[in-house]
Image (cartoon, rainbow, N blue to C red; front, side, top):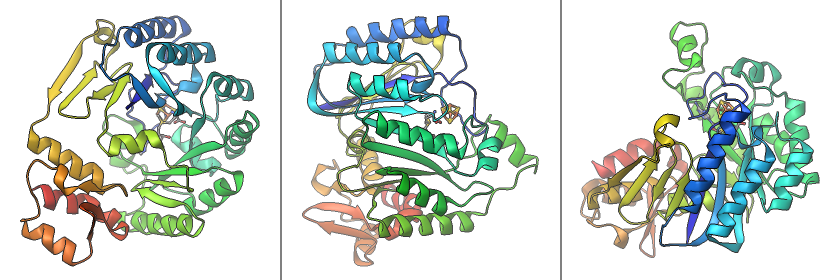
Length: 359
Ligand SMILES: C[S@@+](CC[C@H](N)C(=O)[O-])C[C@H]1O[C@@H](n2cnc3c(N)ncnc32)[C@H](O)[C@@H]1O
Ligand code: SF4
């Protein structure tokens, strides 16, 4: 069983903070891309054919014609055995997800929608280069419900210069979203935001302030029955993202489209080129993980989410390491039935704990 990711590398415009592989391109170019993408899916000879989740991400899948999206989903359904209860997600920008589009996605088989909301502060949205307002974000969520979606997620950004993320979350919960991803704003190389921060034009909150906001948001969501099942992800019971959870627990996945990554669930990772010229030639990068690299990955992914990792699944034992035993004794790592989990109180310092363990 595996997951399928489809990358749609197009956006209406670039947001000032974003370094994702996404470009503003016209319809003719998009048509060429989808033609190649559909061929790539049809020609894929990966031995596992059972699909438990599909995720259309980007870029912005909602900014291209819904016909292209539906056709691509149909190609996947013809080429693979998509399980009847598969989770099928589409990432949408509130500015381009009209009621008509959402209805089309729902009738085609999508059963989960993830909106890039980022903030509900109109000044912040404008500053970030978003093309929607608070009212449009909330209207898009309403439209998704009217189109028949029950499983709706919203992305928020932590660490913005202004805004009140806890209040945003409160409004989103009232709007009926069942899942929230709260990402720490990363100041990525080559983005306009990086220049603004480096030149002093924009001042971001201190790390302490951001960690404090993260803690308050986590407490608020937990009080409202949203389980934190990964550092940045919170969901009501029954609404964890199956697709992302499969990544974090080391299951196999196939990625189609520009720069998309695949993993055979064992030791082989492969990806398509992240520039169009090479992508259209079908070039692939293949990487074979060593047993110790695989262990590191299992520890890193497992400790970021509530699934943890199985001690006996590692190639080399870490239970002799003094630091491992100290973390267990101090209650930082929790062990039950051979599974190691990070106590969620320590999610905000998970990076340094993971580094100590794999050092
Ligand atoms: C592909 S985008 C989501 C869909 C759509 N493109 C949109 O923005 O509405 C995935 C998410 O990545 C997050 N993201 C993008 N750039 C980021 C950055 N520099 N730091 C943290 N999160 C980021 C945003 O929250 C965004 O919603
Ligand atoms: S955040 Fe979303 S809409 Fe903005 S540039 Fe990145 S992928 Fe496109």
